[in-house]
Length: 543
Image 1 (cartoon, rainbow, N blue to C red):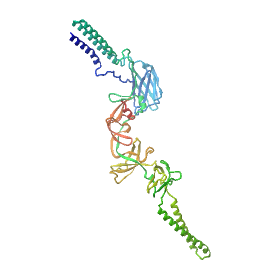
Image 2: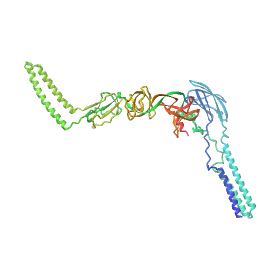
Image 3: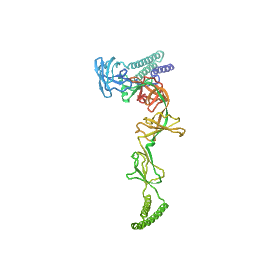
Image 4: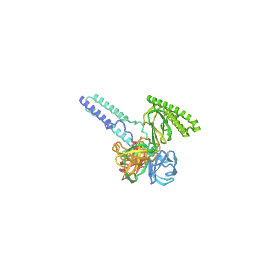
């Protein structure tokens, strides 16, 4: 009898706890969050315009964009034919139009006719808007879950009562059977309370979630981006066009100064640097050809000073002798005892000796002036007063910032009519003009020079760039800005197609270099597709 009592109790406990295990299959002890709900919306397109209508309570928000470029249209006249009659939309901040629509509070399907007039287009766009019933929407799953729990609880309770009756009928000792029945009934109610309150609040009905427009990646891989978010991210698109383009090659390059508009300031002899009046010119200072930038004072050795002093003594002695001769010749020339020619020769000899004497004094006192050879700005050079400059030392580099070149390294000779462009690491594009290529190899490559024909305010001498040069071969494809292509996590190149007003589909593509601003789509998409050319990286971050 005790064995039958223990077996019955164990079976009852297992049966009662099985409901809880079945109710939580997969060990999900917390209810999964409901999917994000979006506000009721409708859209319409024409050849020129794209319109999205979003229900915001009792107000209808209207977003109007250009179909090809996705550019918002902020100035337009919009009239909506509603169930309450025609209503004119008012423009608000953010290029949004809104219409008072109290009829949106009633669930149902509404067919609206929107008449749009802009400065360039005029269209009639039909829009269908379906408002779900707030009292039933989303509650079916909650009711189904409650019904399943009620069935499990009822089965557990009935099983407990049944086992208790069996034990009472089969046992001889009614005292133990009655105690077992009471325990099973109490355990049933305990399990009932646990199931009823685990993870749920059944005392009050859950509130209806409020619809929110959130950017999200859909199960099919496409990305949903509401129009309001598109305005913030400045999403822009373009229509793809198939065409023929010249194949280009990528070359490493760097910015160099124009050889005809740059120069070096060097010391011809070794000496000590000293600043000119006003000090050394700073980096970036504009100078003109002929400006004195620094002085170099040549150092004199002891033996040099001794030789110079000896030479000065000899010159002083010769000057004294010639002066006396001139003094004698002057009165004699007046009487005719000495010819006028002899007097003039003596005077010229005296003047020559004095000039040679003055030159020796100048060598000891006057330093060498370093003069700017061209107009431009100081691009490099940090001289210090008292610094010793060796012969041929570059003290300053002067560059004309408006005249810069690009030196690229090519493995093949390029034609003189080569069309080329360059791109910096920051993404700035530079138009280039071919200037020439070298005839001798440099590190197994040929140096090629190009002149920059565009704005050079964002580049500096020595900066590395990527040069895109055509090799004359033609290829067919679709040209897109480089910003339109993003790299996926697996390394695949992607572009985003604007398949509907608020949905973007990633398309794997194969690209070829075209120039500094564009790439060529060789495969993956066709013509007449709307492709995102601005904001593609932001769309790719949506999860």
